[in-house]
Image (cartoon, rainbow, N blue to C red):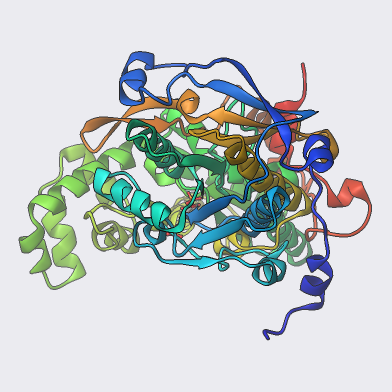
Length: 554
Ligand code: FBP
């Protein structure tokens, strides 16, 4: 038996809260159909691609008892993509709901993500297993993976797997791409008269799977609390030692929701939001200038310290670097053999500089050599630059250093600049879920099982009214096609669930904008401290600033 911590022991007995309707009637609530739905764009193309799942009505879960049979239910579940706190509670919610339907019901966990479903690799989840994982972080109960479930051949195999075990429904826990694929699977089953339901659950720490119906994906709350604790500790450290500038890159892929949320929670001196950089057409040199200028102004007040938050995807949003990356992707793909034969860093740089357009070559040569090498050598299996692996925090601090040295020589900067670098991502992805995520995920799992019991397919489990206490939350199924649009991917038009980037006219960004000038120079640091699981509700059940501001009326 593995040793567990005192907190894990105490946390194991936490009973997540459910909305009143589910708490009272279990999975036997009434699932009421609303009006037919439609996506906000590309209706004709989506209708053609999803003839069976297009236009489904909203499915809201109401108090009145009634729907669903009490026949044993068999559900299969997969976890897809990067870890997000609370995944185990989705599974616990599913398990408790299917057992409430009938004690002979079964939950199959398919191992290692979507590939487990295709290759029929599974474990039957028993009460003992579930109890070991309640309210814990990580996805280790069944593992996760990034295999894309999208071909007819894969769907045939999934159908064979489900038939072999007599599975009635599949729950896909994932982000925008995985939920798009869940809808494709639902469509395939309907088109082939296969009576298996498919329901999605919104997961990602990045915060970018959200819309009017899905206020927040699970995991964002806990992950941003962990990063905010760490950033708060650093703010406290800079304010004590008063000698370092910390450049902190935070995960989030292309979206800056994590950077924005952690900034609102901690109020550091500088926060960059990629979406704003793109809209303003800000160049790399502009960003460097703005940071260097803040360092200079603070130094004039005798403050040679500060903290800057940088979103993971920034580099892809700087127009000039974005064009450089596209050219490099193309160039290296077309000259693979020749490039491989080069021996030294100098040869590599010389080779590409000679072949890039004038603008791209200028952007390339303006970068420090280690970043140039990252751009050339750190590539994914398709040969593309792995933008998220670029150490933007080091790139910016080294360029800021360069600028400050220039100003020092001109007598315009008299301070000191000593940078430290951090990348916060994995530290928060598998953390034990906050009370919010523990309750939210359990409710999502419970809702997904309830929808399957009511024979709904092609929906994503959706929980609303999240700023109220959990008993007041609402539960529903939202048609997946309603959240889609058509996007250009790999040279073709593909249906995808729209990824939500930071909205510059939204309240969270406006809140940052109103305050950032004063946060630059005043040390208005906020120290949120570690996630609290026990204690006063205003501390333990605190929601994210993003959710609070977005749901605020008026
Ligand atoms: P998902 O989009 O799958 O939820 O993953 C989120 C994320 O943590 C991103 O923030 C990050 O860019 C990426 O996964 C890292 O992926 P990997 O686990 O392959 O290192």
